[in-house]
Image (tube, rainbow, N blue to C red; front, side, top):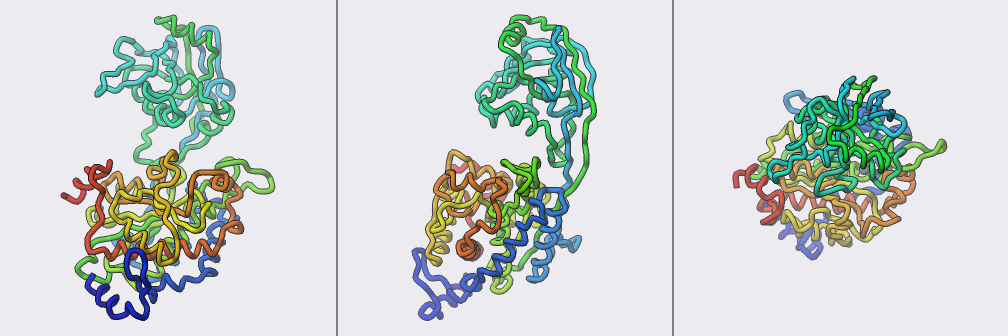
Length: 505
Ligand SMILES: [Zn+2]
């Protein structure tokens, strides 16, 4: 901090600019970012040839190689010092639903491709009564056990969807694999949830019945088949009225399990202040996107089936690299880890893997500054997801003001954005973390038009805005890295306890 204060007081008169939060040195590299440099990078990363940068695809690897080459050129030390490598391999497992499955209840037979969806589970053939088990939920802490008075040993279980407290779509998605474990623990041989979501069955089936990629180490294959069934109301009533159940049989065969890998990419830059250089600012952006055609997000056609992900998140990757370059030219006081993560679109997998296998100790990692976004509908502003929570608002305000940009605090709260990007992998470990996003006043049609759509092309991106975004992002990160004290969770924040445990505060 000393260096900075002297520098500022010497040059404040000529180079400095008064902003809301103080004086900023306008000779810093971020003040001369070149719009065309940034545009070139954006067009490359969201080129059709990168095929939507899906985790595990060649396009994703090309993007990773590009990022590593840039960090090498900027003079960053390899992220993995022991291996002299800019990469961190993330072991993944791809699991598809069984090719064929059948469930018999009494005299009725349901098949996959029809009213039955076996989402996961081992190959199986088992006969046993089919019984109704309410929600099939066990929560000992809150005194709930739907199997307490119900013997399901050797039986096939049908349940209501979701959990006793929550039947929302999210709860249904979250719940089913946990419910499979609960049913298996109670001795059941298979479990199916009644499908009642207001979402076309066809689409749900192709979504959940498709491949799913998860972290290799926590995807122990499910021990019993589980999935969803569409049953008519009278059949449900009959099941509920028959505690002994109906004779039944379940078969599933043709499992598809493939081990695979993808890579995080990163480099490290030593801070300029020897007193602070053992503290690290972790800057992240995911570089993966959703791929092509049915791998992807929204509607696609024969003419355009590539989800280019220019906004999501080539935009953030470009800003991460812009900051990396600026910091190489004029290092901040604390050290910086630049980490481009893979697997975000599949469930924050790359960031989660790094947080479990950090290459710099987490308790020396003082902040995670993540950039990601669904897009923008207000180019006069940037958005901060997590504003008011980690004590860095002043640095953000100062950086934004230096580029005549506004700050939108926590937009679209109904979207739960804080918990939907990579920042949450680090927040969960206690590291103060947030996501810096393009200006978004709400999740409206202007956002939905591009969010996870084939229309998210680089040609549709406002390049002047991209430049300003990169500038604010870089300066904000610099100001955070130069703070005299480390950021920390606001009292009472849901991650405060984890933070105290991590740093021994
Ligand atoms: Zn996305």
